[in-house]
Image (cartoon, rainbow, N blue to C red; front, side):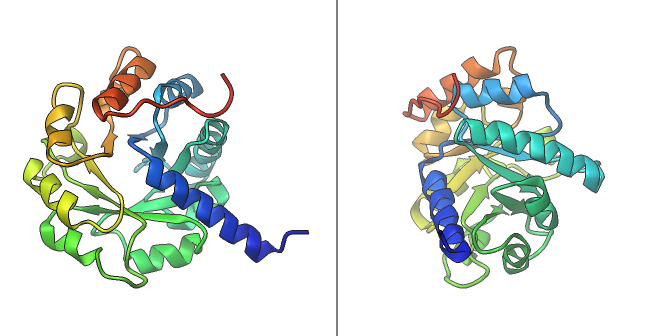
Length: 228
């Protein structure tokens, strides 16, 4: 019988392996099963649930549903801002912002076998993640590259910060912020190999096709894992 610690190490290694190969990261609020599965079929590798106004029970219930859908397609499921609910929701990790909590605290809450992501908006914040230690995240978001209503009041950083991250980041980074089919080519030209999107999929008439087009623009095609 496999020892619990060996199982945890295996789970941690599998999550990090999938993170390394991830290219398209969907961030969304409450969505139905059809939308999530369509985005996953199109090639989303990671789905993050971000529900700022929901209570704990609602987040856990939605999280469990998202977790099942992601697991069926071999995708990672991340919970925004709530490392304390990751285990109950069945998530693969948590994502925190610069003003939420330190990565070290988030990691203590989610456990060593799960992932912790961090938003970055400046060269100094990117540089801080190059150091080893308990405050080093498993991945970072870099942006907002373009102005976006999902980050109202935060100034767009443009592709210069993407170029900086492509040279300096020592963990996987996802360019984020107003990225869609029209500008993803510029983001890729700046050095991004991974992107995170909200409206490009949430606002799409056909999320599966939109996800496939974004994957194609990234230079990667994915055969989704799991049920057809």
